[in-house]
Amino acid sequence: MEKVIKDKHGNIFKLVDVVGDGNCLFHSVVKSEHINISQHDDFRNYLVRTIEEIVASPENHQPVLDLFRRITGRGKITEWLDQIRKSNTWGDEKVGLFIAYIYNVNVVIISNLKNVFHLIDVKLFSKVHQIQLITDAINTIYLYHFTFHQPFTPSTLPNHFGFLRLLDPKVPG
Image (cartoon, rainbow, N blue to C red; front, side):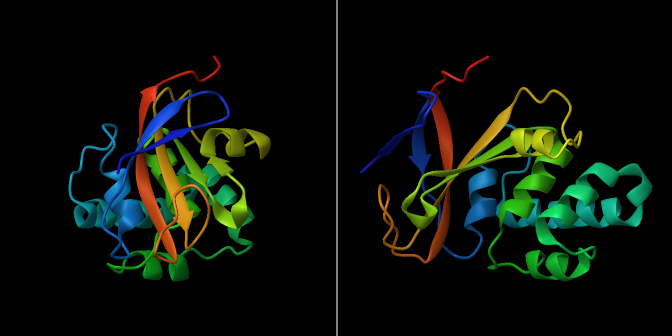
């Protein structure tokens, strides 16, 4: 059965589910037309290598590193990268942060976490924190995060991502 989701702005999305193998965030992201890598493992490897390059030259990438530290409360990215580098391990909102920065796209994650539709919007988040993370990004990658036995799109998996294909845009300008 095809799921259709409507957000608070009236945007209509088709939920494109992906394999729940621990790589679901990466499977979902490569469904986007804004990502030029089609295989989730190639994308994960590219992302990790690029983040390592960012960490190696922090003077050129201070906005994203500062925002990462604000989110995590820690200065070291290496532990997180060691985890993200492993196939079949979950991605998180910090992956979305780096995708937004590297590809200059907005990443929006709609979630049913805690019985409430919950929205992560990197463009808005960076604006609130007064950090220029993405420059006038006009493209957006929409993802849907759903959790075990939560409303709307129940999942048998404890945590799962899917790709949201925008069908009818009504985003306020």
